[in-house]
Structure formats: C-alpha cells, structure tokens
Image (cartoon, rainbow, N blue to C red; front, side, top):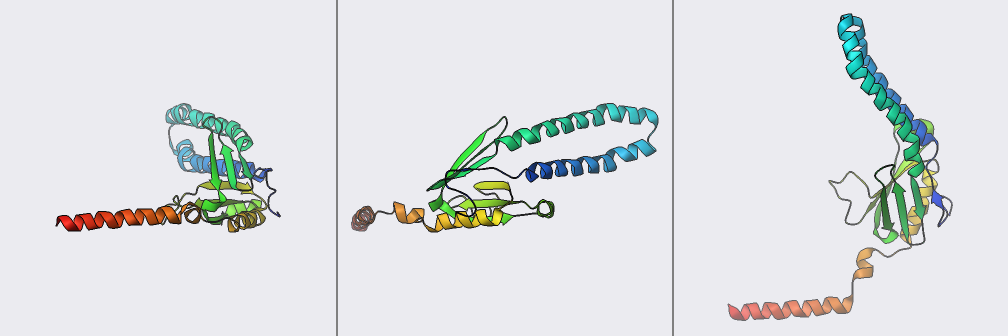
Length: 194
C-alpha cells in the first residue's frame, strides 16, 4: 500500500506541531495588538499596570500552558489501518479512541487550509454511514497533519472498495421474508376488525 502499511501506526508530521505553534502565535499577536497595545499607548500608567496584572499575566500563563500542551498532545496522536478497520486515539488528559470499519466509510476528504498548505500537510476527514449527513460538519475520524495525505487517502479508498456496505452484510433475505409475512398477517387481522 503506497500511503500506509496494514498494521503500522500512522503518526502526524512534525509540521503539525509547527502549525499549532503558528496558530497560537497568531492568536497571541492579535490579542496583543488589538487589546493590550492600545492600553499601553493611550491609558494612564495606573490602568496599564492593573491591566498587566489582571489580564496579561493570566494570558501569559495560558500561553505557557499551551506551549507545554502542544507536544504532549502531539505525542498521543496515533492512527492505524488494519485489514478490516481503522483505529485512532489521542488526548492528554481526556483520552479518546475509536474504531471505524471500512464497510461503514462513505466519504474520505482532504482538508487543507492556507497555513497547512505552506507546511505541506493536510488532514483527512473520514465520514461513515449513520454519522454523516447534510447538517453534519464533523467527521468520524480526522487524521491530522499528514504529509503523504494523497497517498493515504487513496489507500483508505482502496480498502473501502474491497468491502461490502453495512446494509448488504446485515440484510438476511430469509429473515426479511419472515418479517414481511408477519406484516401481511397483521394487516389482514386489522382489515378483518374494521
């Protein structure tokens, strides 16, 4: 398989951490320019000191926490393709895991914004039968920060092509005909009572 080997762990590119740091830097810079810089320029020194103590110090603590958290979160991200399903797990404090059989996958899309494109990475969004719909914007699995995203997408699509859809596998013709016979009997009984 060109994009992924069966049974091997898939890990995001290190560029994903750089992407997260870039987003964090942009948010912090915007906060500084929009909120704090005007106070430094136009507010009296007493107000500036109070703002620094009560606003900037907590923001800097949050910034330090995010700098600590990004590598920890990155280390927990893991995806695996097996012969019949995909598995994923992530989370530093609140761990999330999932299993998606190939026969339930309906869409495999690539999601790449301008900053991700600059770093040469993209995310693969995988939606499944019963989960995705016209009003659903999220996906069952989101494989984030992959460099070989086109090859990985093709690998997943090839695995999906080899599987029967869920509805075909679970439909039992004999059982279905028994249900139909019962419904016909119920209908006849109801018609007799009228």
